[in-house]
Length: 147
View 1 (cartoon, rainbow, N blue to C red):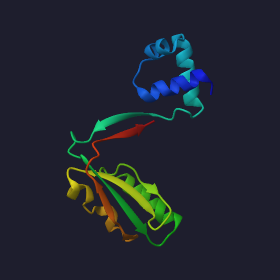
View 2 (cartoon, helix red, strand yellow):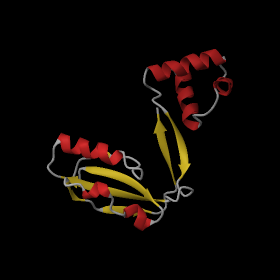
View 3 (cartoon, rainbow, N blue to C red):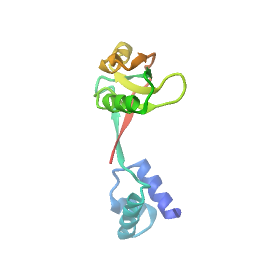
View 4 (cartoon, rainbow, N blue to C red):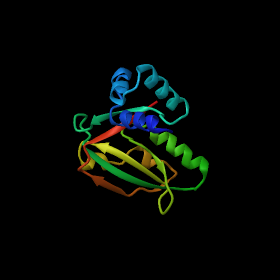
């Protein structure tokens, strides 16, 4: 990574929809140079995707809940199976396998604290032993990553 690569990454983090021509002009390089360097950053895995910022209030999901889930039995198969299942649910923002007292962390959105904290099919799995929840009503937007 040189200074131009770092500048390209910073500019794309600021506005991932920026055209190659605008990006090159802002950085003082030829459009072909900007495009070549951006492609190289993607090829090397430095740039892994782009995201859209969404107003979750407009989707009637302005409240975020953090759901901690303890799974039993503790096995890689159970944890990865649960992670894959929960990740496919529409209200799930992300799923993290964590260490400590609980095994997974699942941020979830809802229209109000009750909706964000509502028990879903994910916590009725036979593997779920405990699922305390913390509602965060001040959250209003999130990013969705795509490749």
